Length: 119
Image 1: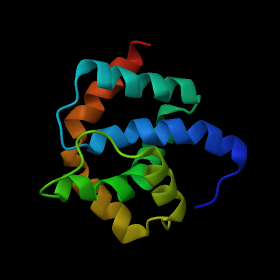
Image 2 (image 1 turned 30 degrees about the horizontal axis):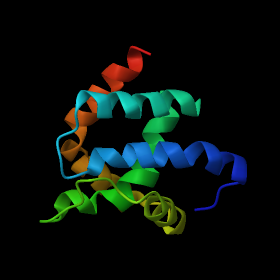
Image 3 (image 1 turned 60 degrees about the vertical axis):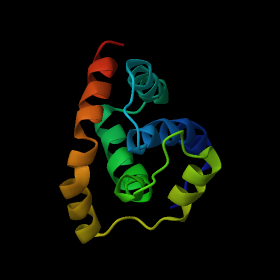
Image 4 (image 1 turned 60 degrees about the horizontal axis):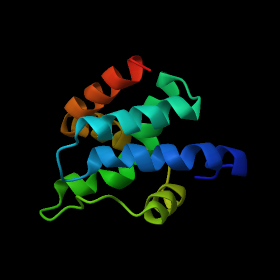
């Protein structure tokens, strides 16, 4: 994927924050609020953020939740950014698979949305 520098400046903090949804640990209220703040600060609509989550962050981070010894302390920012930039846009099958696997982060995502709506 390619993005201009202005878009990258906005997207990088959002990517890193959204990647926390895929950590092998239970997120606390302050974690959920942090993600919601990053979403708000991005200036993107909720629909745009959902697309960023599903088609940019989800494909590169979901494997962590399938791992026996997944990352729990936080993804390296450079890794998240490079993984997203080097990933191919998901095809129709991959988008379908992402939606089928969304249950793995559904509760956390709904909790983030509750925090977001309070901002």
